[in-house]
Image 1: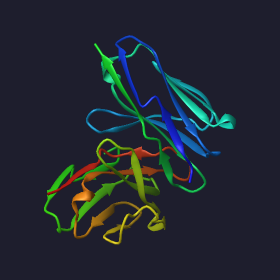
Image 2: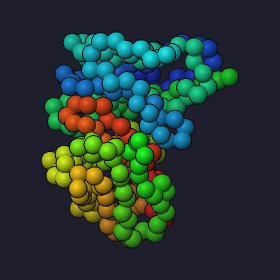
Image 3: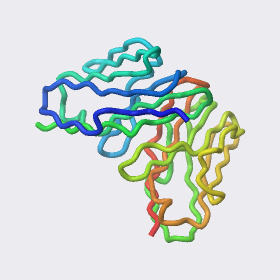
Length: 108
Length: 113
C-alpha cells in the first residue's frame, strides 16, 4: 500500500518561531489533507491541497505532486499551535492513509 | 449542528461487553468513514460507506467489529465481546463525495477495563 512519511517526528520551538513540516508519499495521490490534532484530540482540517499552494493566516501549504511531497509552513508560532500535525493522502479508492504525524510543542 | 457529531464522547466498559458507537455526519454528506486511533499513534481506517453501502470494509480488525448506516445519515459501529486492545479513540468523518475533504467528529474515547 501507499506509504506516508512525516518529518520531523517531534519539534519543540519557542513562541514566535517559524517551522516547516514535511510529508512524503510513495505514489501519485488524488487528494492530500493536512490536519491539526489539538491536545484535546480534536482533528481540525487545515488544508485540502492535492497540488499547488494555499495560505490561511499564519499557515500555508505547498504540494508538489510530481515529486510526491507536501510542506506545511507555520509562521510566528503560538502556544495554541501545539499538537500533532497529520498529513493524509487519498490513493485510488476512498481510503485516506495517514502519516504518523509531527508532534509540535510551542514553548512560551 | 453544523459538524460531524459522535456519541458517546467517552465510554468505559468491562471486557467482554458489547458497545455501540454512533456517528451523525454533516447533513448532505453521502460518504462516511470510521477510523481508530490508539494512544500516541496515527489513524487507522476501519470502514467506508457510500450512501448506505460499504464498498470497503478492509480495515475492520476482526469479525467482532461491524458497522451499518441507514437512511444515508446516521452510522453505528458495533464492537462485540470487547477486548482490552479495543481501547482507543474511534473517529468518524464525512464528505460530500470522492476525493473531497473529510471532516471529522470529536471522536468516542473507548476504554475497556
